[in-house]
Length: 133
Image (cartoon, rainbow, N blue to C red):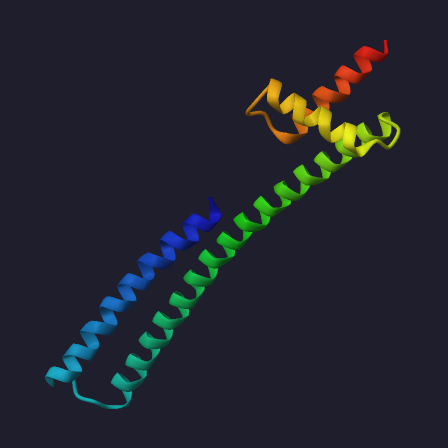
């Protein structure tokens, strides 16, 4: 929420600064303002404010996007770790028989299509524990 407020306020200030800059430049070009040290510094400060706000806004937007991408990658990594942990647990239950583990997972996928990968490993592990009892 805080980032959105920064973006909205920054965009509003950027819009106002752009309008002021456009007005001052148009008045200079049309000759209604005399070109002196004051108008030079005023125009330069408006350009500086405009450029700084523009940079900050896009930096903020890029930062938000990179945070979203980082969070998605973290979630994927956590899922992969959970999947590999469950697969290792299953392989250990089958005394290291990787082919049997893959075969049981594929069979579960055929019996219950459309489930997440770790669900199949959990299902096979539960079935093995139930069969052992």
